[in-house]
Image (spheres, rainbow, N blue to C red):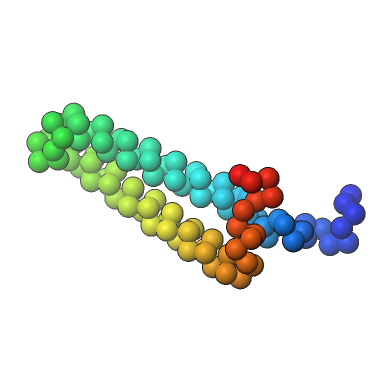
Length: 101
């Protein structure tokens, strides 16, 4: 039980409800982007740094990874736009969690 009369109501220094899960999701998306990027880099390096030297199977894998990375990149940008909109609605001070993370 909390002292607040409204459950889950954020204080003036806390982001709106769900903000922590949103930032955790964003961090997971960013991590996924970089993991895909590393996979792509590793694949390219197996063929002297050039997709032109890849056999058809590797080229298909490269293209699939690149498409997935593009999708993840687009998701990152959508989330960033949501954070910007959230900041303009709530005030920039609320973009930083109270513990400074």
